[in-house]
Length: 313
Image (cartoon, rainbow, N blue to C red; front, side, top):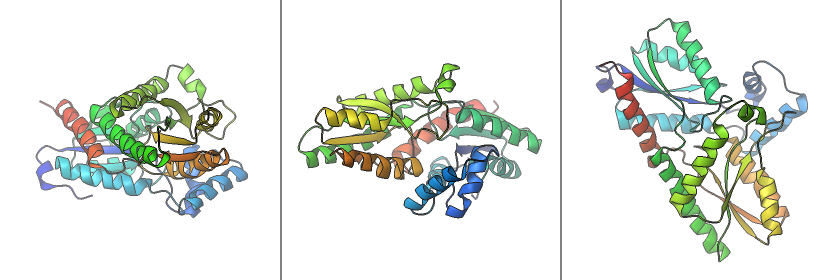
């Protein structure tokens, strides 16, 4: 991304970090090797994941939305904003190298995973530090550990929830219960002191309060295909419970995700919707933030605050 002229005097920039995802079906096997640090998954698992990407159009829109977020943020801040992915192109090392090449000296780093877990944010940070070390550059970094309770983020998620729920309740002719969701992590991660479970539940409670929603519950989605137990309760079990209580509509608000990708377009739109339909329940969901102005304002607020901390006096 070209560097705006105004940024040159300050030598500062922003780096957005994300998980990464393939945008072509033929790249899924190699992508999964990156996710697993070179350890192969069974063929049937690779085939299932490839099938899921096929069902959402042949690839993930994650990079498209992340680039749009970066472009909007760069325009808002008048500084260079880079995109680095842990598991796919453009990799974090490429983004760091570009920032160094463009004479950036001070870098505010924001993970596009607002809640802190060592399975996501922790891994991003490790790769970032390794990438900076490889350049040998004296790069001053302010790494944002978490922003799960950032007021503008909460407001943005609440607005999407409120608008979508209003449409659902109008169609249903009455109140619709809400399930707020976030990506699950292995139970052992939280048992070891990871703050993720606490932070996602804080986000959920703040979003529900800001949206004025009283009839809600929280559940985890997108559990991994491993033998280790992952955090629950699962979304499917919450749908079952609501169906048994007599509800015929449910609204899902994925508050742990910032844009559309496979966990939204497949897990929610296909898997959970089909599961609900089999139980006589119609499932609705919040629109993703994607490149919404509210999300960009939240990112800009974080970057502007930490720019002052990051830059030398």
